[in-house]
Amino acid sequence: MDLFYNLKGHFNTIIKHKYEVMKNCFKAGIYLQGITHDLSKFSPSEFFVGVIHYQGDRSPNEGERENYGYSKAWMHHKGRNKHHFEYWTDYNINTRRVEPVEMPKKYVIEMFCDRVAASKVYLGKNYTNSAPYEYFDRGRKRRIINDKTSKELEKLLLMLKHKGEEDTFKYIRRAVVLGKSL
Image 1 (cartoon, rainbow, N blue to C red):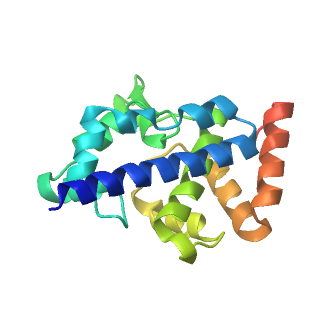
Image 2: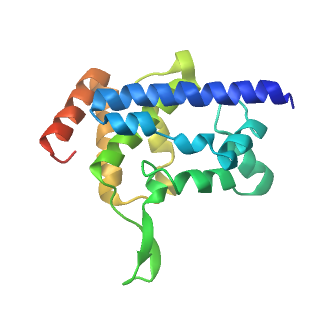
């Protein structure tokens, strides 16, 4: 492993991703979330694991999972970043199980912005407006997410696929400004 190569590559990937998410969040009208998005990636428990498992074409958390069977960096990340649906689980006193709960709209929007940015960063010139939806669709059977949250995210991803970024972000901005549901 070339540590300097991994350090440079991982740092550049984080910065590129943060920039893309910030642009998307600004287009969506959620400015503070765009600025503060994924700051935990610079914490030692996430950053150094990312350097060690950097691959360039997918999340380093996948490499950590392959080595250890789980990713401590991912558990740290999802527990601190409310734009991940995995954050939104809680113990249900009626069923006595941990279950997904509905995400607030501003985090669903940030999750959308994050997924679009991740697709752009990892796919590069192969990115299309359908790529974020295709990624979402591939994980449908294994995802544990609140039904309403899933439908809201899917609606935005399908809108992106069929109508493009400009119309989708216009729709999102209108929902943010008017306080309407997605």
